[in-house]
Length: 420
Image (cartoon, rainbow, N blue to C red):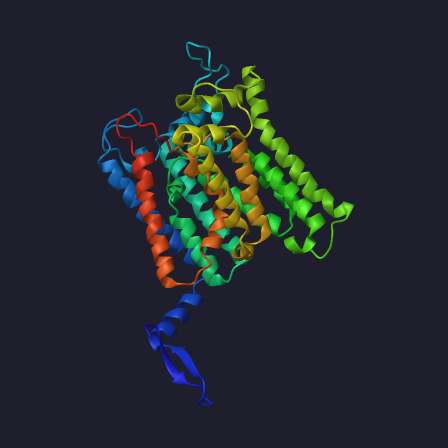
């Protein structure tokens, strides 16, 4: 054996596999190290790998609308949406929406939630550091926190080995570069995972401030409200599916119902704020529509139409419709297949609720892979097989896909229509 020896049992009838002395000593030392320290080392190593790839791309980056040629790491990590967050951190949000010659709203800062850039602004004033340094540092710290919470969350459902491997995948995922660039995804994911952990622990009242902050960091309020409705429904119909002994009483329903209502209101708050400041009722939605106009032109936002429109644009009809149906059926089969039950119904219902939200409002484009980051808890399903060959191949594939994603989405190659 590669890491053990086989000896006879005391009875002499059943062989017992014992680890080699060196392996046994290594495992003993490994167990002494606190779990959070192991996850921290894992996270740092993953960020070094990703950072090395980013630096490789920055070394060949030519001058563009964001940076000069061969930009340093912090500048290269603050392009794309980072430029919008810089605008918000320095000047806030516009009171007048920019319009094109046809009177359509053009791209502007109202597409971005305020919690991340305002936090960055506060730290800039407190420390005197540059936007790039503070913004990337906030993402790095938030990503570290997200990895720690993710490991705790996975540990609620999986054995330690599988929970740790799921965290490995979390740290090296194809879009894990979001943990070290000037984007709000890392902060949003940390808050989301903390909220899911509180949900699993049934600490509903504690969820409220986290839900409020989450809804002002990333547009997930309506999706989380739908999740709470689904959890309440399952709790009422099949309590055992959410590990509850009986159906809820009126009193026990109040806390999750309040969380659902608050989350829904937070999901509607930002469009209302944009309306109040600009005087335009559809300021937020029209701003979001500006980003998809270069694909399909100016169209009204019709719920659940964007993905049909998007797949039709990318693949033409009827192939686009067929492919979309296959994607949805495949997602449902993956989430509800018997082995997926290992990660708990709440996490799978979150993935369903978030996908329903995306189907309702989001237009699939090059940023889709980043937008899918909140369904990271499904990595617990990917981590179930114990084969070492499988695990090595999956990690290698994730790292390769990081490079592919950076090549097609992050690196600015002339006229680039694939923003991350």
